[in-house]
Length: 188
Image (cartoon, rainbow, N blue to C red; front, top):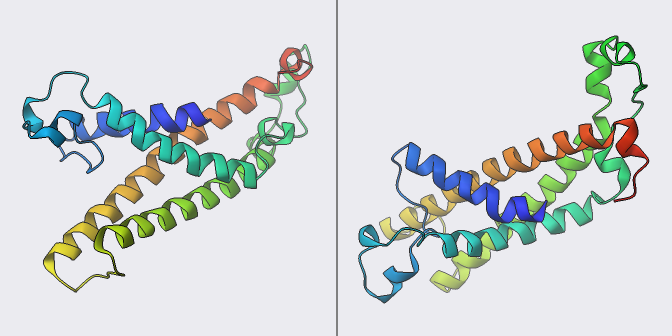
């Protein structure tokens, strides 16, 4: 989970930014731009380090959320009341409601961890803004603070959306994988 939230989610976010021809997030400044070089002239691979650095912060948020929601327990990544046998007909005989109900514990823990991680991300962003401006700021004070607050808001929303997509898809796939008879008995 931590590797996905550190590497995969921020990388997908950058792919989306490039595909949409949107401006780069403020955290995606090439390292060379800090030394006076134009960001547009940055060599290939120069966004790797900023992505890892930003992803490390996101991974800390997700790890805290996952620990708070006890996402490390086996219930958090296995299906409940699964009817897997060696016979595939029993799996296909389940109704859609019964199939969705199998994921209730997985989804509950996922939402709990995600909510906690979002809270930590929002509080840490507010703390970052407090340290940047050296005072509490809000919309309407000046154009500079309004622009910075808008950028921070959009970046937090993008981080939450991409983390949610990556972690949710991973957790659902992992739960499906761990609920097969062969993998259920293994100790990972």
